Length: 372
Image (cartoon, rainbow, N blue to C red; front, side, top):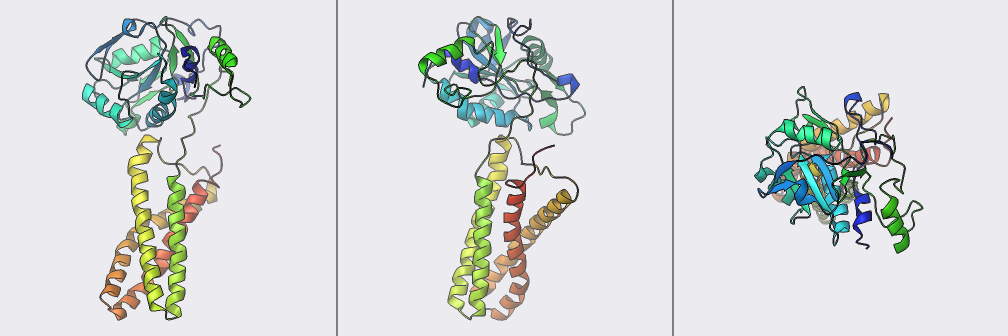
């Protein structure tokens, strides 16, 4: 992996998120006056209480990242991408990342430290800084780094109360804004083939004026596609396995093979329990740092049918859990009369929940229509 700092700055940035006319942020063209303007004087404090200024960052490129801790928009996804994709590629270079909180009156040094540790920012390559007041930071980001930012006082969700551009300005070693670029693999050219050393030097030398992956001048980009996770596929697979085990268990008891029926139904319960654990982990640990849940893009009757299926799946899953536990307990007690009576209701609901778990995944992922 090449270590030349000239091309590592090409890694910085994500596609632009348009917030309407007030926060529309087309990238300045190569000849625009504000494209290579100097960053104004600033003095902020990092999560360790150290002062961060133009002078402390001078002499090496750095990448500015707008964010705030309680953000429920693109911030967690962008920060995770930086942690997983950008930081490893900057290893061995002098390039730093500086995340500027847009909510400094709430994001204390302790909050910033906890947030940084959550994303594995353990060294001085990645700084998290705050100002004394929100107005000071918003003015610096908006006027100094050309990143649109404003507070939305009508927002009910604190995580949506500050709307901001998502592009990441690249600052060169002289303290001037060099450009705004997507988070791209610097070792791959526009033809998809790896760059040799000579090509990489050329890309680094001229990339700030004309990004080799795409022309950015005058264009506005949509919110980046959320990084995919394999957990939804795992969850759908667990539901599918549970469905097959339930069918096999039903066939076994109809053939009066009680031992096999018991083993299959216990296996179905274990698989369903594994699904529940995986589902809860995904929704409470993964989604908050990956940009939120995937949305169904269909409209009209298709969307109504999807929402009806999803609602019935969730409601019946909640209802079915105590029923399954009760049926298993009655079997353990060998109370076969009450076991059979309750199983007549529990089995079809369990079967439906498992099947719709697979269908929800298929509709929401492989067959989800593209956004309009």
